[in-house]
Amino acid sequence: MLPRCAFSVCHVLVLVLCLSSAEDFDWTKNDHGSFYYGTFPAGFSWGAGSSAYQTEGAWDKDGKGLSIWDVFSHKKGKIQQNDTGDSSCEGYHKVKDDVSLMKELKLNHYRFSISWPRIIPTGIKSDHINEKGIQYYDELINLLLESKITPIVTLYHWDLPQVLQEKYGGWQNITMVNHFNEFANLCFERFGNRVKNWITFNNPWSVAVEGYETGEHAPGLRLRGTGAYRAAHHIIKAHAKVWHSYDTQWRAKQKGLVGISLSGDWGEPVDISNQKDIEAAERYVQFYLGWFATPIFHGDYPQVMKDFIGRKSVQQGLGTSRLPTFSPQEKSYIKGTCDFLGIGHFTTRYITQKSNPSGRSSGSYFTDRDLAELVDPRWPDPGSEWLYSVPWGFRRLLNFVKTQYGNPIVYVTENGVSEKMLCTELCDDWRIQYYKDYINEMLKAIKDGANVKGYTAWSLLDKFEWDEGYSERFGLYYVDFRNKNKPRYPKASVQFYKRIISSNGFPNQREVENWRRKAVETCSSSNQLLAAEEQRSTAANILRLIHDPLTSHMEMVTEIVVPTVCTLSILLSAIFLMFLLRRRN
Ligand code: NOJ
Image 1: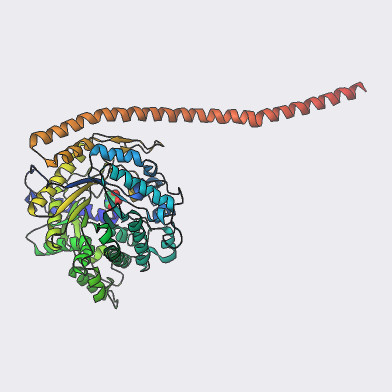
Image 2 (image 1 turned 135 degrees about the vertical axis):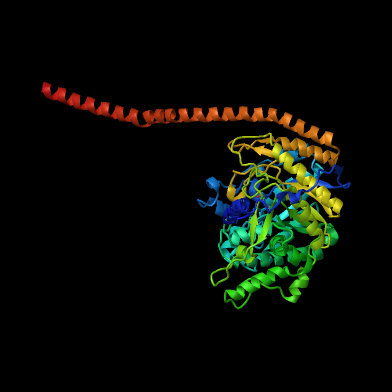
């Protein structure tokens, strides 16, 4: 996700572009061909995903320690509406229900993450291991396997134990590498007999940039120009260490795979005949996906990052580059530490060259890139501000991965779209359209030769969407967050995705159109159900409001008024009696 400041620039640029260069810029040059009917290779794995902090809730239950997201979301003003993940979808208490939903979808795999502080409350293994936390993941894994759903487990989806943040400064500190390695080894030891697909980090770009550069995410630090590079450096080392641990200590016995999940928007040059734009678009992708993928596949940061950040650091008067360096030993240790590459992809940008003024005070991840991002105002934008639907960008990104990194095994670990509507809407035909087109572009990429083995719809449920709170819903299933039980309702996209899974692709136009029609038809009954439930809970709330003042009034009468009146009456009677007695005397 992009920080808000980048969006406003983006939007202004869209306007400028529309006004000034509408005639000489042909948006349709990227007409990306027609729909491709066909099926995926046999054994292709279909899944859906979630993450611990976004869905589990139970933030302080059964001995769990605090994570940086617990602390961050409890600070006022950090999250939309001051929402928190305290109870979220109550996933911690609804394992059976949620596995039933996955069975209903006929998923081949489910991607979830383990909350580090749930199983090691302080983050430091020698302090304490929380067996109740381990039991929770045991139950989830066992239920998945009984249901023939393969678990794909992420070790770090952003919820660092708070103690490690307070004690060491989190990912700014190299000691995280060892603590993370101990946590990972505990997971291999306890779950590795059943879990064969491990993802070390989810989207480290966000951790680094939004956690340590813009501060929009936990831990909320704004260490401009250095914080993100430093955090990323340690994360890459931690990833490599965990891969080596698995390779040397567990692989022979457990026979699993260890990868990393990287996010990457695609960057398309605004003008494909302009060399400067081509280079700027390449830089955009290298500063995003390449920042992490290049060290992992080739041993070092992309040359373009080293050049740009190095030059800008010199212009700032710094003695060394703000981008840290790997020693020769570290380079060979990091290179090749990936059994599969997870790709999280949602959207695309047009990119043009834009030089940022250099000076002593300048220097941030964003200005280091010397580029501007643009969007086509005609791209559908149903939900999150940053998420435009541009399916062809997905095919390009997958082809980029194929050529840049030696055609690795790829699992798409996140892809999907949100809706912003606060009102309930289960007939999400725009999401059906998004999935249909993006999955189709992935099919084309496979036909191009990309080695994509699986796809994970993001996400199974509506959930806590980080700094956006609950205002953006990515789920295939709608979650009623106002109801304490957090009931789930299928959106129309559930029916559609289910058909893609059971046909392993898109058989022919007539059938695919039929799926869509039926999905939208059936969702209206779920919509009615939800609407009725809403009316019921609204009525209950109104009753509670009416009832509340009445009860408190009654309480006041019995607790204060009655005793006061009684005491006063007794006093008055006594005074009256004394008065009568005196008169008689
Ligand atoms: C990537 C993050 O990994 C995930 O947690 C989030 O829900 C999606 N982006 C959508 O913003």
